Image (cartoon, rainbow, N blue to C red):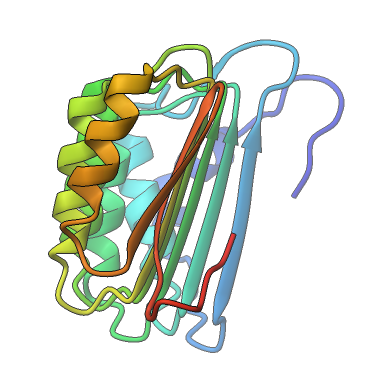
Length: 208
C-alpha cells in the first residue's frame, strides 16, 4: 500500500471491529515494510494504545513468518512499538531473519538500547541486520554493550550492524577492535564517518 499524494486517512485501521476481524495468513513467509515521510515528519503512534492494539493484532496474523524487514525513513519511532513486536514475534517459531533500518529517524541511545533488548527476547533468530543513518550519533558505550548482548544470544549465527555518520576517534577505534576480538567471529571496519560491525558463522563467510 503506497500513498503518494495528500494526507493518508488511517482511521479505518483503528476501528475495533476491523482489528478483531483481521484474518490469519499462516502461508506468508516474508514480510517487507517501509514507512516513509519524505517531506515532513510523521508519527507512528498518534492513536496511542489503539495503535498498539492494531500492531499486535496485525503482526499476530502471520504466525508462519520466517523473515521480517522494516525500513523507516524520516519517521518518529516509539520504543514501545519495538517491545510489542518482540512480544509478538517470540511466539513465531519459524522466524529466523530480522532486518530493520532507521534512515534519519533521530534514534537516541535509549531507543537503540530498547531495540537491542527487544531483539534479545526473540531466541529463535538466526540473523539480525540493523542499520542507522542519521546525524545524531549513538554513543559508543551503547553500541559496545549491544554487540555484547547479541553475541550472547545462543541461537544467533550472524549479525550485521551499520552506523553511518558516526565519527570515531583513532584511539577509540583501536580500543573497539580489541573489544570485538573477544567475541567469536566478530569483525569491525571503519570509514571516516561510519562503523560496521558484523559476525559470520565462520571465518570466511561475510555478508552485507
